[in-house]
Length: 284
Image (cartoon, rainbow, N blue to C red; front, side, top):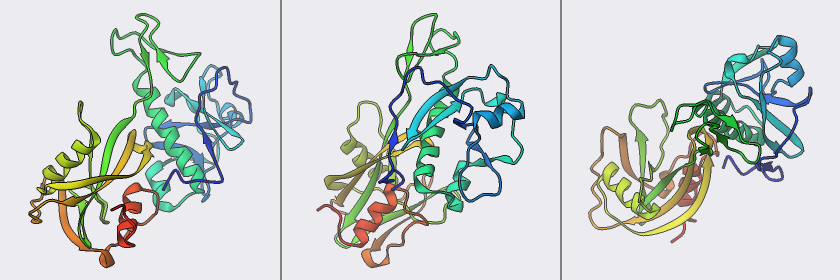
């Protein structure tokens, strides 16, 4: 999966008073587009020196993000302040994944940075009193100097569900999306809902099936949409006829183990769960 980057390691602990240097690598986002060196298969970020030379204002704030192995990374907080150095361009982070730009540990770092960039951008102002927020000096948080509210990065829980019936599994395709490959049933956890209840509800809502024997498999951070994903397998309970919610799905079918086709890359928990079922290795 995308987080499986060993022997590399992402050290995501926040470090206080970490000063940006001229050779520090900087994440510069515009929405979901990231500034990288043009025309390369690798993901090469600009340095502080590159940005300064291109005309990025000297007062532009760069905040420490994390360390990948021994390399520290920072983020330019105000997206509009970034001047584009010669030889660099903005590329959509999903395009990077589709192109297979890498290495894997850098794709994971990009997706984690994108999640934090979105959080910083969405919390420039306090949702309680409307005052502009400032960076906390003690932890990864932003704080309102007017009312004192502390705001932490948002993480949204969701489930991935493999519904099985012996040697068959329910596979789906989402409605209204460009993805041509199969996925599994998925959905967000509601307020006051346990993961197991999310599994029951999402399966009923999307394909009209009751389930039993719900068993946990594995979790995954999915920074593209601020998620923490929890993977579950379960067995159909009774009637196996699929009643598909056509507002959510364009296809939902029972597929035998030997006929399971995987996704184009091995980044997702969904893909690994489909592979485990295909190979008969899912938890029983």
